[in-house]
Length: 137
Image (cartoon, rainbow, N blue to C red; front, side):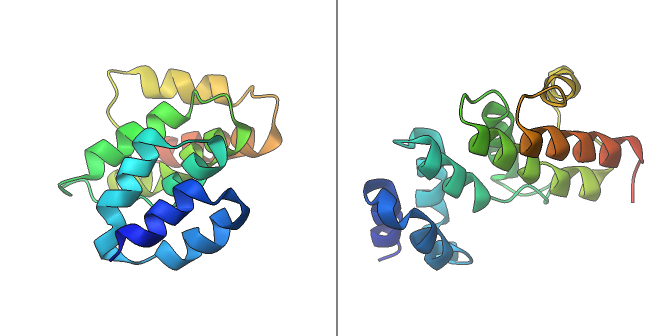
């Protein structure tokens, strides 16, 4: 019944992060976590869902979809979502030595995020650009 905690994450924002912690590492709930990342009812739930996704396996079946979720999150109006999206991308950059493929827009989006009004997304984007600039591991 992995869907039960994922459903709880979407409906009970009072316990979002406790529920998120219960879902962490629960492989059976991954499809539900991805659905939440696509259809989160709030920025808080989207932040929690993004924090549970993977972005470090260039050959992974769902990694490219997760990367798109992170990239989409870079433009979200909620500061916590932008921050979590920028935190999700370095695993890919560290594994491959480059930014995720996004028709060349990823670098532009991250560069824009380095000017964000909020410190957390700005710092995360700056670190990510540094990882990508350092080349392959």
